[in-house]
Length: 136
Image 1: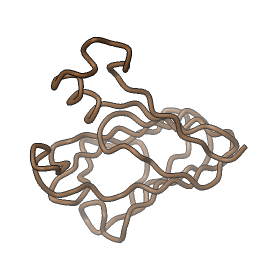
Image 2: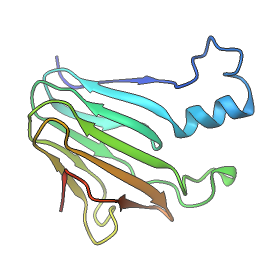
Image 3: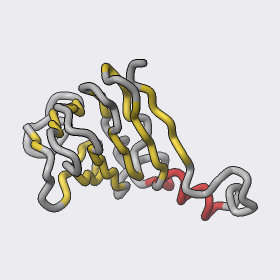
């Protein structure tokens, strides 16, 4: 089975809080996405929250650029995305050219526990802290 993604809301749709403004805000910026399968091409479909790469083979994932602007205006500025590798494979996440601040666009994971935190601002991803994944 090739790479498949499952997105789980932090606030389940069965919760009475899911339809509130706060519940919607938490789910917009805080979903959990899990990529699993035997590897292959896939797409990271969330801009804020946590992504877990659990593929047993090499996953080649694509990450879209965030939308510039405040969330209240439909943008993604200030949203944080954490990507965590749970398998020892040479997984990659690729953005558009220069999609990561510093003229970078590829993130490579090699070991269990490799991770990176990215903040969205003005249509570009910014690396937060010191990642254990390699950014090039």
